[in-house]
Length: 498
Image 1 (cartoon, rainbow, N blue to C red):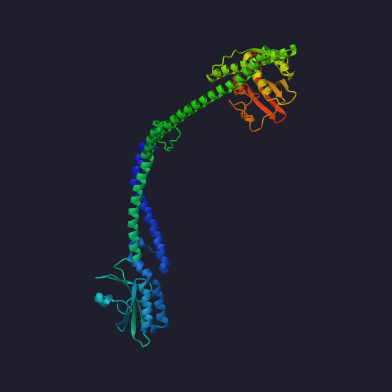
Image 2 (cartoon, rainbow, N blue to C red):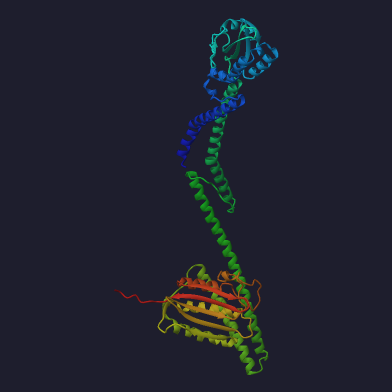
């Protein structure tokens, strides 16, 4: 919500909304009080306490007693000479804001209130005998110092004397329920205004001042060098947009900082790994050279073995240095690719012949199976694809644990792609490690030794090269049986112009 809209909403909140709330509250309170009033006094007719019609209210309050008195006057008029009965009846009427007056022969024989002493003229205003003509709903309004509603019921005493029973209600004042309702409405109006004001203040604070305070605190955090926090502002106005932009800036700064930390960590780990792995073949080369120098290699066979071992260790060193050089190119995304058309069958045959010499020297059986036609061609960088094959095979050799090591290479035709599978009979890879083996510096076995060293970036280089060729690489493995690395490359197809 834009700031202009917020100001308009604030105006409505402080003016129109309280009026509407007060109206709804008045209607609800009036309905509730009316229902309570009817239930309290046993009324069946509708009563509008809010109308201010006191005559209606008092008339209905005493209607039931009027009916009961008429019935008892018919059945037993002598009861109206019994003070005990009259006092009990008068007490019930008082609970309904009325009292009883009984006239016998024109004289007051019972009066349930002292209103006649406070207003002597009330007696003179009482209607004469038979003035109401027996109207059940009848009542007259007497005006004076105090206003009264009079309900008259005429009868004849057992001794033949004419008499009248009056139910008198002082209507000059409101019943307590109405007074209470008015007080509650006034209180409710004040509460609505206060709540509306507090709500508006809180809303303005939360929507404007609170985001600004959070933004100010966030700038202080960044100034202090702390990027590990979240600027959480849920607003869609100009301030919210500013906070969202600030949060995106903070996230980018943190990502850059984390990348730098990770890069430094990986660089240190790479240097440590390669330093360790360079030390191993150098130590071996020194040992064998010293053996030759000291005449330990006394026979031609031993000498040949020593020389071949020195050659293999030198190749290991060359491969590690090559990996380090290539890694720096990956990190700067400056790999020099030279894509050309490559005949799949011929290219992989040459690769296998080259790799086979090293496998034979290491005593590893190498199997090669080509299932593609002689004319199948792919677009690839021959040098980098050779790096892929060498890195995968080197990784397989590192984890061969059988007495007789076996590596099989299969080239398959899978529709628009060729699929290369390199299988070994090594110790295999656990299922939990399999998805991560192509990640940089990931090791299935964190413990290092001379036979299972390496820089930890060989397979990540493989994945990078394959993906840059538009291919895909994955692995399958069974612990104790071996591992298969699979990758696919799209075939080259001539486009014939129509």
